[in-house]
Length: 400
Image (cartoon, rainbow, N blue to C red; front, side):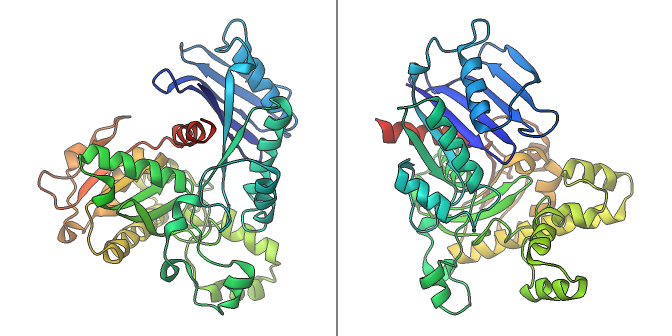
């Protein structure tokens, strides 16, 4: 069964084409980026290793999906003989609020829910919906499945998801913690249980999804108990450009002090803060900040220490919330690739039974691996995330 997975962003459409019947084989993958702005380009790679990249004329998501379809059928580099081979399309959708708690086949009612969540996820949901509607137009009759970032966190109990504000804001306006990166947290926590050789439903796991955006989740017996992101993806960790946790009074103080509008404040906290704002070198990429730190930049060193401390604090808090811990998982761009940051995060946690093996941590590998010391009470895993495969698996289970 051929499944196409689409992740539509504000100016990009990322895609992966799987043959799920052939050992979940990736037939082709790629990205159309800078859509609607200067320098629009596409990168396409098939399972044979052929790579095609260059400038393209794409002005909107529909153009992008048309171009992706053409590449998949291309006489020289394509992987399909007909678009009829595509049996379903899986989409990443960020916010489903309380109405959508599982992967679901897209209907007009589901699209209304996605629209209702625009205000809570303005940077993602509108573009996710555009990608869905583009696929409906280009591949009519093919089922579309939505896999929601918030779905995995739907098992959180009220004591974890309620905020300390008047209760009617929850009952009337659905203001609560929802959490994000759920597909990744679900995938890597299950993979960690497999690597550990113990039943998923018997483990206490903390997963750390650390990329330009970042979140931590507490998982017990296969169910999410708590997560660091909240109503929106702004809460929690210090991220690439997002502030993470701040005193709400700071927001009000800055608005008055700098005469900022709500939109300007939103932009400040989401796009100008985090590592970008703390490091002060014009980059939110931790590799750039680590390079500057190694060259003696004290401000960059402090920014990295703040980043690591916030993750370490959440690991400790979630260990307490779970009543113990079996596995800590690192995943996503930073979590999978920065041995320095992983070491900084777990520094000082030996007393909690989280003991890093420095030599194992230093090894770079695309494979799932254990980097804790032999006999460490809490295992430390590095698990490369694969949200696209998880979306494909959910899609197959629904359309079958």
